[in-house]
Amino acid sequence: MHGIAIWFRHLYETTGINLTIAYDPFDRARFLDGFLVTLELSAITIIGSIVVGVIGAWLQGARLVWTRRIVQVYIQLFRNTPPLVQMFFFYFGLSSLLPTIKNSFGMQEPPVSGFAWACISLIFFAGAFNVEIFRSGIEAIPSSTIEAAEALGYTRLQTYLNVVLPLAMRVCLPALTNNLVNLIKTTTLAYAIAVPELLYVSNQIWSDSVNVPVMMVVLFIIYTALVGLLVAAMKAWERALHRPGLGT
Image (cartoon, rainbow, N blue to C red; front, side):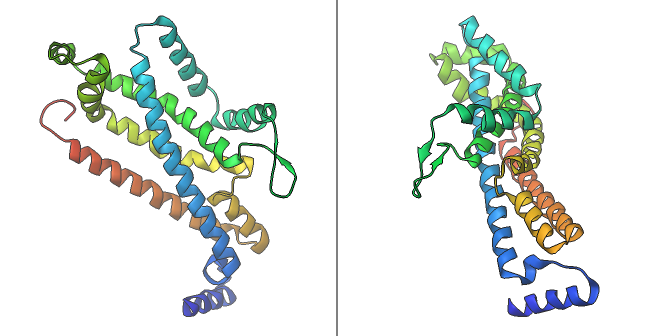
């Protein structure tokens, strides 16, 4: 590791390519911390948005008209407004309405952190699209399949979880993959509310070391790799669900 650091320092001295995260322990530590925050933010928002999508698609078929209307209002609100505006609404708007609490230093601070607000905002944003994605898959299921499940004594919830949702997933996986890819890229908006994710710490590094082009290339490579891993995982899931017939 020490030899690699020496080589990258020599590279900087001879070519001007200043990759400080390779030879500076401080820059490397904060860059790795930012990378872990991005991974955590991506994982939480992906899982949360899928849960919101599944529940929202279920509620769209509710018998109560007001339940369906509330879901529609949610979809239109979060699908038709910029995600950055939504994040500011949660962080600066809702957060200001909550009572503050004392931290360990005796200072007042908001009860919900910026990271938590970023997760909430991105989950609701991507979840609105996921509701429509799952709805499209559900509508592709023949009504005879649902009627057969009900004839076997399944309740509406059992039919949804055991019959409709597994079949619908095969239909909507490509669209879901596309939305989750966009979600990973949208996590960079957490930069705007000072969440120390990858873009935020990279900005600190290139401000200190004046190596913007190098750090931008690193960011491009890392986000390309993250998206590639997600797509590969979703493709593997799609192959695992592959059966002759519906959605294939």
